[in-house]
Length: 115
Image 1: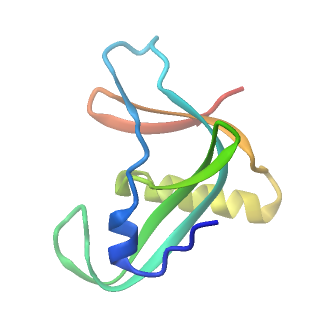
Image 2: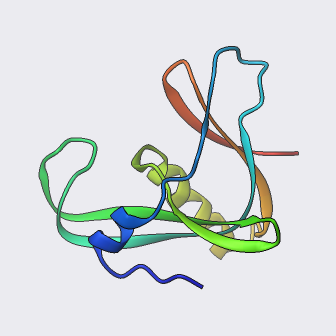
Image 3: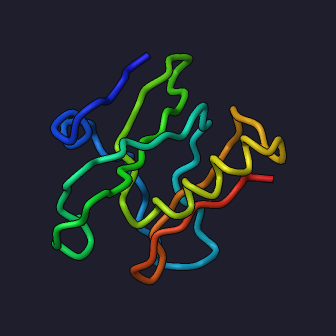
């Protein structure tokens, strides 16, 4: 399994492909998520605000594609979502692997469980 230990390695990961939707009844990109994680970047530039921060959390996601696990860089706009999901996994409320739909609708990125 891939391990990311630097900002350079995180930036080198391919960003998770996420579908842009026009209508709310369309389906986004559905992935079987195996794992979520973070790289704690010290003295980083905030990717959203383009300002220096003492710490920044850079999210990663591992999905199953054709029976193989592949790690991607998760967009920064989903970092709070990823952080919450990791907390839910650690509390035992949810388990991976699970299917999650990702999309961009009206300029806003979302992630939701496929039920």
